[in-house]
Length: 144
Image (cartoon, rainbow, N blue to C red; front, top):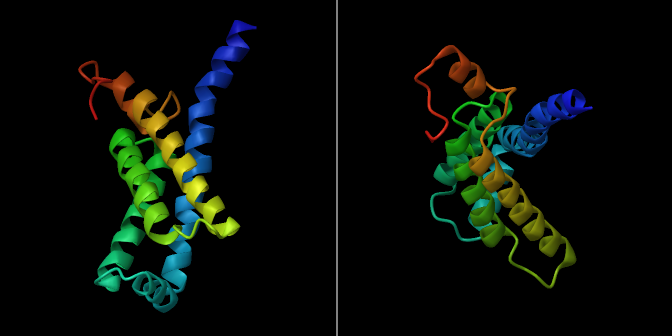
């Protein structure tokens, strides 16, 4: 029983990373598909330089999503994505009287919470970081 539990536990961080990454990857590709609409939405909330914000969002969402899936530089990725979730929640989902907006605010905050957990515990056994750590005796788990 302990063997099954241990193998399940080692796959759980990978599953969690993939599930969280899906949100960012789908959102990033949607932004790529609709650049004008996305920049218009960004501008509608008063963010200066919508093109720059658009490009930053794509880099953060697609880059962070890929890093999550691969389990590489996971603590950096998790921290940046968590901050991104909080910032986007506050900028784009602040109409709390609207139940849909409240839901999206809470969803973003919940994702940020999950990402903070990833920041704390790391990538897990099924990751590039774990693979690197086993091939390099000098690798440290305390590194960001």
